[in-house]
Amino acid sequence: MPLLAVTMGDPAGIGPEIAARTFNDERIYHNCRPVLVGDVASMERAIDITGSRLSLHEIDDISKASFKPGTIDIFNVGGTSPQTITLGEVSASAGEIAFRSIVKAIQLAMKKKVDATVTGPINKEAINKAGYHFSGHTEIFAHYTGSSRHAMLLINGNIKVIHVSTHVSLRNACNLVKKERILEVIHLLHEGLKRLGYPSPRIGIAGLNPHSGDGGLFGNEDIEEILPAVLKAKSQGINAEGPVSPDTLFALANGGKYDGCVAMYHDQGHIPFKLLGFKWDQEKQSMTSVKGINITLGLPIIRTSVDHGTAFEIAGKGIACPDAMVSAIEYAIKLSGN
Image 1: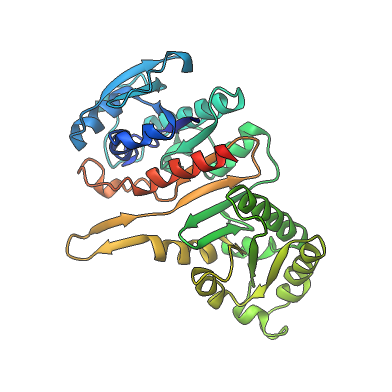
Image 2: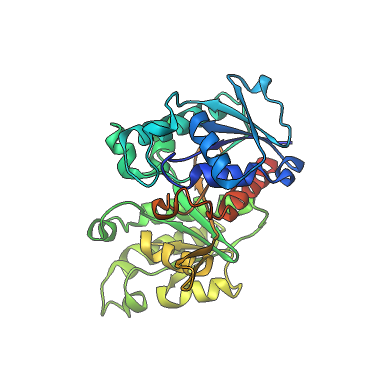
């Protein structure tokens, strides 16, 4: 069974709690051998908060892991007491632990000690307060694996969406809609979907402007940059279609017309994805379900992740939902097998 390195995420958020709930489910041991990378003190607190019947087994090498249900094998990158990390607050201390966890997981994968990595939620501000100037997980993984060709793929049900750009301003995102980058992302999605079991994936490419520009009435990017990339992809044997009007593309994909979609910028892809997977309960004033995962394509290692934040507002309440973490592990297993 594949070996997985699972990071705890930011210790001030819900990451430790969803890790505790996930590892408390014996079923994950039926299909993989997971180890946790994080902070022992924070995990002890999370186990207490969630009421999980778990013990921690600190290791410094994969060979020392027991992979026994009821016990979390953990690489301890912390060394702080939980009192130094205040739940629900951004801090350099929490950012330091989160960052060390990510780098350790990457190192384990690059050295082929594990088959895949699964990451918990981090806080970008905390990471930067700790002195590590990255805009997110994807950029950290790209840097430490030496990857220049990469993109974020979000998955929830029939919605599988990759992005031409992510963590940049909207004004800059429009400037990044270029034929070369679009074609690169189409190829990354095509390769990724094949690894997920689609032998000839059907790919829909979103337009940038309303109605994909309406023949140039609302902008020329769709004609001058997106369409040439789509035509080039088709000439290379990829089953691609577009630019498709972005206000209908995701409805079509959710209905099964496309196996995957290319979004031109962050919110264009994230909004339909999260509308499908995030369920808000007005009476409880909390999310009752947070589904959907993130896969970084183009890396020399496998990385899947939850695609929700640290949820500082509910950290410590013991109500965090582990659905996304469970799904991220399932996709890590699937990718490891392919």
